[in-house]
Image 1 (tube, helix red, strand yellow):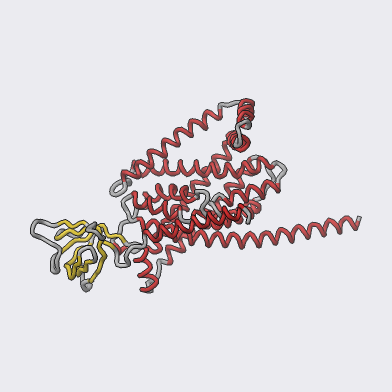
Image 2: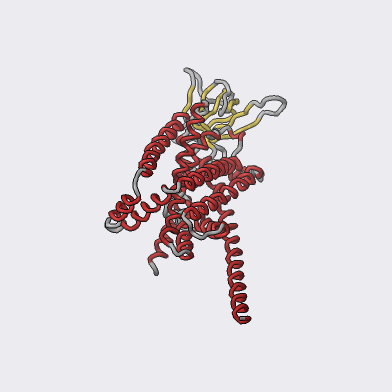
Length: 433
C-alpha cells in the first residue's frame, strides 16, 4: 500500500469525522431548546411569550402563544436543557406552572429542527435564496480565473483566457473534492509549469494569486469594517467582536502595507542577493527563495497587482452574499432565532473562508462547518445556524465543482481534437510541398 494513499485516506477520515462531530454536536432537539424562562414579562424581539400548558423540569415546556390579529393561538412545545441549565427568572412566590404567563428566550434551533420541518414536515426550502447563492457564486468563481490570468500575463508568459478557464475549472474540482482547498492550486501550478518554458515563473503566478487574494481579503475586511463602524452599523449583539475584527485587520494592513512600500525601495541587485541567501536555508531554502522572487517580481508590477486587488474585492463581495443567501435558504424568520446582520457577515465570512482553506481537509470539509459555527457563536448567535449556512454553501460549491469538472473534460476533448486537426494540416501541407 502506497504512503500517499494512506495519507489521503487519513485526511478524508479526519475531515468526515470532524464534520460528523460538528453536525452531531449541533443536531439538538427538533422542538428547539429554551435557554431562559422568565415568569411574566413582555414579549421582545427574539422572545416568545405565552401561557404555560404543561411543564416538566429539565425536560420540556408547552405554551399557548398569543397571536396577533385574527390568527388563532399557537401551541408550541420546547425542550429544556438538562441538569437545570435552563435559567428560570421569577419573582418571589412565582413559579413556572400551568396557567402562568412566561417569556421564553435564548431559544436554539438545532439541525434536527430543520430536518424535522423540511424532511418530515415537507416544508419547501427558500429556493429563491438558493438560486441567488448559485447566481453570485458562479461569476465570483470565474473572477478568480480572470485574476490568475492577469497575473500570468503580467510576467509575459504566453497564456490565453481560455487556458485560465481550462486550468481554473480543474482546480475548482480539486478544491472541492481533494484534500485541502489548496489542492487545486497545486494542480494548476503543475500543469502550467509543464506547458511553459519558464516553469519557475509559472509556479510563482499560482503562489502569488493565493497570496494577493489573502491580502485583498484583509484589506476588504479593514475597509468595509471601518465604513460600517463610522456609519454606526456595528451596534447591538456582536458589535464588540466585530470591532475587534476590524482593529486586527487594520493592524495587519498597516504592517503589510509598510512592508510593501519598503520593498519598493529595494534595488534589484539586493533583492537577488537576498534570494541567494535564502536558498542556503536547510530544507526549505529553495521554496522560501522562490516565494521571495515571486513577491519581488510582482512588486515591480504594481498595476497588475492593483487590478488583481480590485477583482478580488468584487469576488469577495460575491462570496459573502453566497454564504448569506445559503444561510437564508433554510433559516426560518419565525424561529425567533437571531442571526448576524449582513454587515457582520461581511466581517466574519472572510475569516470563515480562510479557516475553510486549511490544508489536510478535502474542500475544507468539517473544518469549514466548525469555523462558521464558532464565528456565529462568537457573535452571540446559534452555532447551528452557522453550521447550516456552511452546509448549504458546500452544496453550492460541490455543484460548481462538478460543473467545473465536466466543463474541463469537454474543453480537454476539444483541445485534443484541435491538436489532431493541426497535425493533419501540417502533414497535408508538408505533402503538398
